[in-house]
Length: 308
Image 1 (cartoon, rainbow, N blue to C red):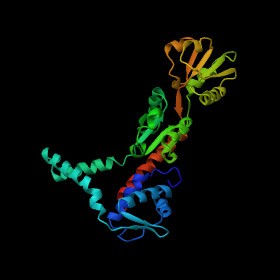
Image 2 (cartoon, one colour):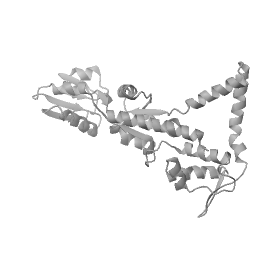
Image 3 (cartoon, one colour):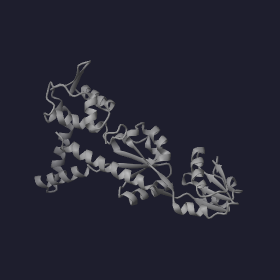
Image 4 (cartoon, rainbow, N blue to C red):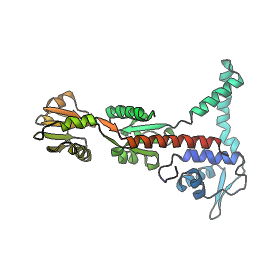
């Protein structure tokens, strides 16, 4: 995909491809590289990402940048320097394989299989609470066949997502939080989750003389959930953002509609006369969008391994 901000190509992908073209001889010593904009256009990335990776390679001596003239392949002996650690790891792997009776062909077959496995994109699904995290990840898997790694929003900033995951998937209503945590909207795909038909039916069956209290952790969350409720309920709706987890908060509530993010206890839920928990379902268009995005990531990974 070439749309800015929606590319599945990250900085490490750009770096690997540039190195591959240099060390394979596609870009020869002394040759001027295409401009950042041209490279970005070809790879489906953006010029800033390409420029950042070229600066890294310049610091390592692989290329040199000349102001107003461009970037050139240095022709230095950077390849042995960059590959020394990898060569040692390969030697260690060969010794371990020989120790358990692997032949050269056995080891090559194993490497081929493992290499192909790495082409599968790593997808994270991000949510704010463990209950919805598990449930929504299951919905994604059932709707698309795509397995995701569950990650809580609070954990997201602590992980090196730039190298751990090819794509960060999150409900639309958490997009801003995820963007703040990782600072890269091109790595995020927002999915539209809405209240399930079963949940909405329970609310629609209520008499209009009931008073429905919609509880959520934030004012925006309560407002968003209340809007869903208004599509099926014409009675009085009250929005509530509890400041504490206490049964007293809900003791005078008639009908409580709540989200899992509140993590209410059984004592909390004993107060209202009637309780409805919001259960989510994945929008069909979002499921198709995710399938296409993951397929595109896989195709790009395959292209990068065979190019040059």
